[in-house]
Image 1 (cartoon, rainbow, N blue to C red):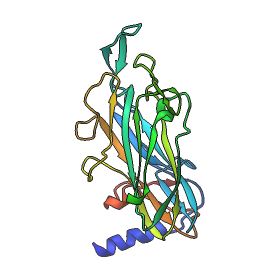
Image 2 (spheres, rainbow, N blue to C red):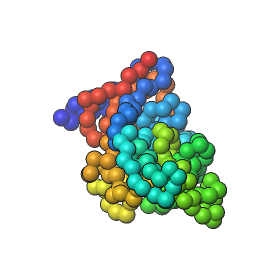
Image 3 (spheres, rainbow, N blue to C red):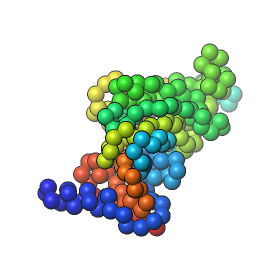
Image 4 (spheres, helix red, strand yellow):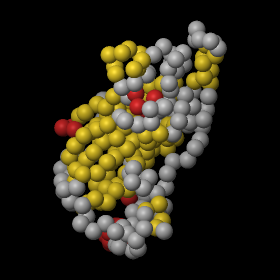
Length: 242
């Protein structure tokens, strides 16, 4: 087994061809999907030079399941369910011995509520969070107060929630981990709709797909082959190279 893992390491670091890496990505479906994305190529993998800074995005794909709740709106039926998310908590963990935090941004698509959340900077603990509790009257300005549920923009479109910039301080391979319910407190991945129902989580089936990202720190990155779920030891699915 040890020789097999060593061989897999060598395959990951092998320079096979030039061209972008094609990643496995989440697929549309009835439940919520979240993934760590490389904004350069849309993959779940990064290859960066030592001491280089690189951007990371957290991408959300809302589900298609929809329910309704009755609020004092016109029309009175406001759609809810995984297709219309109003709140969410996301926490991204990284190894501080290998990566350092530089900055964060929530300048997403102004047409979605993804731009409304607030980053939670806990870089000293090796994690950066993002939280949304509704939409602000003035986008990005918490002091303006929250919109009413009837006027609120919800997370209805596949888009990135927030972006952060990290710097490669070490060498070798590490991962960017979206914290699950099984991880230590205080923050676990969850969302909820405008109807005020119980949170959508992995354990109750409300969150379907969650994808971490792999970071390879190397002086030579051309044509590197990554495969999915390397950090979990699952080599059953491989990314492709054009």
